[in-house]
Length: 366
Ligand code: DAH
Image (cartoon, rainbow, N blue to C red; front, side, top):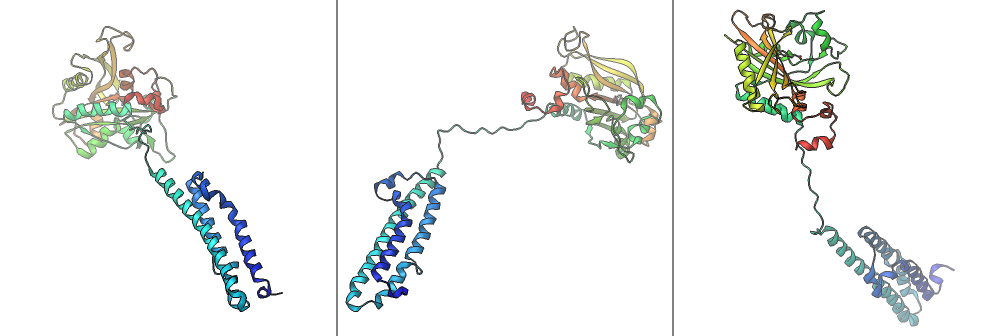
C-alpha cells in the first residue's frame, strides 16, 4: 500500500498523535499552571527554540499534516468536505496549542530579562579599593621635594653599570679593599648591578659639566644575605653639588637644612670623621633622634643620635674622571639610605617588610 492509498483519516490521526507525543513536554506551560513556569532565562530561551522546531516539524511544508493537505484533492468527492474539515481542525488545534505555549514563554522571558537588568538598590555596594603609594616611594618623594626646593635637579639613572662608573671613576681602583663590602651581582659580559648611587655623580658631571647640583634616588644591589637589617636590593639617594668655592660649610648647612625640613627645625646634626675613597675629607652624618630629641630612647638605641649617611668633599680624582677641572671646581657629595630612614620613621623592626609586598603591611601607609 502506498502513502496515498492509506486511509486518509488515519494519516491525519497519525500526524496528530506524533505532534501530541512531542508536545507533551510543554503541557506544564498551558492552562493555569503556566503562571508557575520555573525556568531560568537561559532555560526558557532554550524551550522557545525547541518549540519553534516542533512547530516547523509538525505544521511546516514537510510535515505529516502538509502531506494530508495534499490528499484533500484526491479523496472521493463525497468525502472531500468532511476530510478537508478534519485536516483544518487538526491544524487549528495544533497551532492554537503552539501559540499558547509560545505566548507564555515569551511573557516569561521578557519578565526574566527585565529582572536580570534591574538593579537592586538595597544590595550593599561594592566599594572600589584604590591603590596608594609604597612607603619607600612616599619617603623618596618627601626627600625629592626638599632638595628640589633647594635648587637640586633629580637624576634617574641606570641600574646596570660598568666597573668604571661603579668603582674606578669613584677612585676605587681594582684590588682596593673598598670593593669588598660593595660586592654586587655581575653579568657574564662584564656589567654589574650598581652597588651605590654614587655612580650617578659621574654620569651627571659628564652630561651636565660643572657647576651641577643634583640628587639621584634609586635602587642599589649588594651580595648580602637578607636579615632584619639587610636586603640584597635597597634604595639610596645620592647628592652632589659642584661649583666654584664650594666647601665643607656648604655641605653641613645643606644637610642641616634637610633634616630640619624632614624631621623638624629642632633637629641637630653631627659630623664624624670617616673614610670614603671618593671624598676627602669624609664624614658620617648623624641627626638628633626625631622621637626623643636626643635624650635616648628605643628608636635611637639610647644614643640620642641616628645615622643619616656618608658625605664629604668630592675627591679631585673623581672630578678628573668626569672631566671637571679640580683647580677650578670643588664640591660636596652625600649618600643616604631611603629604606633605612623609612624603617626608622615607621619603627619597623625588619627592613624586609618593605620588600615583601604583603598588603596587610602596606595598607597601613594609606
Ligand atoms: N656610596 C656610599 C655607600 O654606598 C655612600 C656615600 C658616602 C655616598 C659618602 C657619598 C659620599 O656621596 O660622599 O656606602
